[in-house]
Image (cartoon, rainbow, N blue to C red; front, side, top):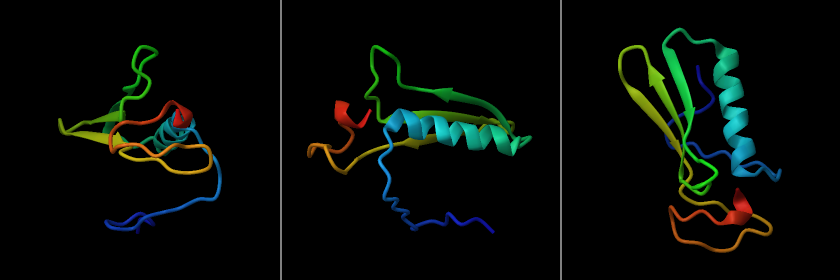
Length: 90
């Protein structure tokens, strides 16, 4: 059974930039070596590092999953509109 269920929110008391979180998620997906995952792609680029869509995961059945960050909060992170990620969080 998964520890992550619909509606469950996890909060950690550590400071992680979004790019670091992207890398941690990809690392875990790769470590799982799941046969259904065929491709994992980072979306943000050096030209557009603040894209709220962080990762795209392609599956063998043709479906696609997206990991997005709509809001971020924490020390040093200014208030911002949803989907407009501040540079301090990247």
